[in-house]
Image (cartoon, rainbow, N blue to C red; front, side):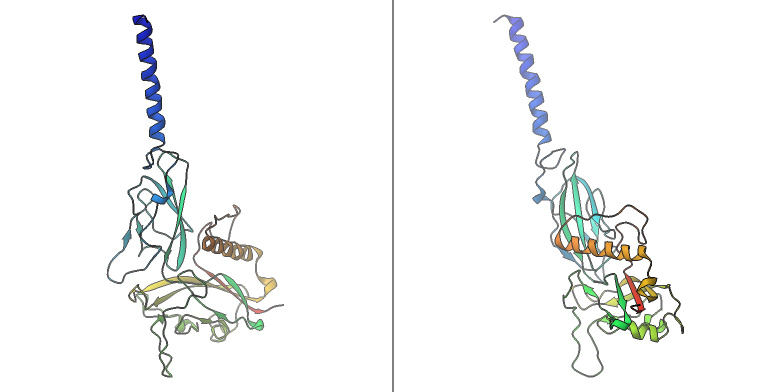
Length: 288
C-alpha cells in the first residue's frame, strides 16, 4: 500500500470514529442530549407530600437529571429547570402530573405527585332535587376518609377544624355559609342563611376562601382553598360556558387520577386553561 493510500485510510478511520463517538454521546443514558433516556431515573422520593406548620418543604428529584420540568394542572410550585417543588407554596389537595423533558431531547417522562389537603369538585347542585351537600375530597381520592375523628360526646367536636381562625379575620359562617366540622357545606342552609342576600339574585357569584386544619401529616398546619359559589333559579339559567368549563375540569381530574394525558379546548373559557382553582360550586334552586 502506498503512503498516500495509507494516509487516506487513517483519515477515513478518524472520521468514522468521530461520527461513532457523536452517536454514542446522543445515546448517553444519563440525560445529556440523548434520545433514549431511562424514565425510571425520573422520580421523587414519595408520591404524596404535606404542608408543614413550622418550615418550608422543598422536594427534589431523586436523581440529578438535566432538562425541563412542568406540571399539570397549574398550581404546583415547581422549578422548571431543577424540578425542585416548594410544597408549602403549592395548591393543596390536588394530584399533579409532572413531565420531564431531558436536555437536548424531545422525549418526555411522566410521574404523578399529590399535595395533601382537601379539594371540592366542580358541580351543579339542584336544591329541589335534594342535592344540598357539597363534601370535600381528601388527597385527591374520592371516598377517602378525612382524618377527622369525631368525639363521642354530643358537641360534635372533631380533630379537624374547618372555617378556622385565620389571618384575614373573616369566617365563612359570618357570611352565612353553613359548614360542618368535617368540611361538608349545607347549600340549602347557606342560601337560607342569606349568603346570597335576603332575596338571592339570579346569577349571583361569591368568591370566598376556606381556611382549615387537618390532623394528618401536615401537623395541623393552616391550609386554605379558594371557592367560587354561583346561584341560579333554574338549570336553564346556567350559562353554557360555565357548564362546559365544569365538564372540562371533571375530565381533567379524572384523567389525572387514571394517569392519562389531558386534552383542553383552546377557545375562551370561564376558567383559564389548566387552572383547577377555584372550584365552582353551582347552586340551583329549581330543576325547571
